[in-house]
Length: 199
Image (cartoon, rainbow, N blue to C red; front, side):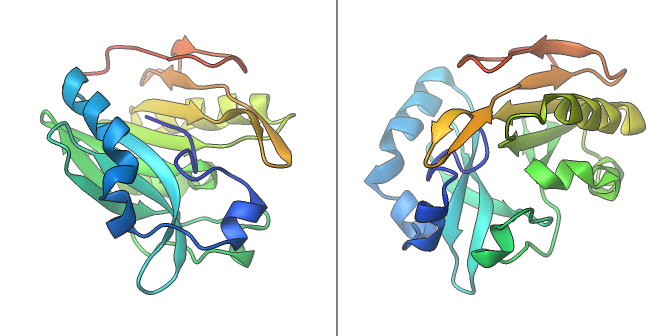
């Protein structure tokens, strides 16, 4: 899991400029990510601001271990200034990795309880959240995603953007919560990996 808009950056200047299409990302631009996924035998769930055929979206980009690329999900619950540049997605989405159903979400989606409820109803056993929280949001992030875990008996995996991006600073707080809402792994604002067994 990688944070919200990780592939393009979470920045108004980027959002207002021409955005990559999925075809562009399917080219050489993501070769390092494809190589890493193949070498690790891993599926990578990332996020990017995309130019779709119909509109601009904040999206989930999935790179499978065989190098295939898909963008199955667009953020449904835009926040702050995001509606200036993007349209909301119109459907939830899951992916299945090694038989485990994983629900996809991006930041504000996780603050809408019904979003995780739909994921649980679709058979997901884990709720994946790419996020970008601003300073002052750490407690809200922790409470929100622990609640999503407890509400539906899901593992919740949060990948938080950290450091400076454009004009903003982000707080990280990547974490993995068990179905009982207890954190299995948690980072602060440092760069790093939160790792836990959720299968």
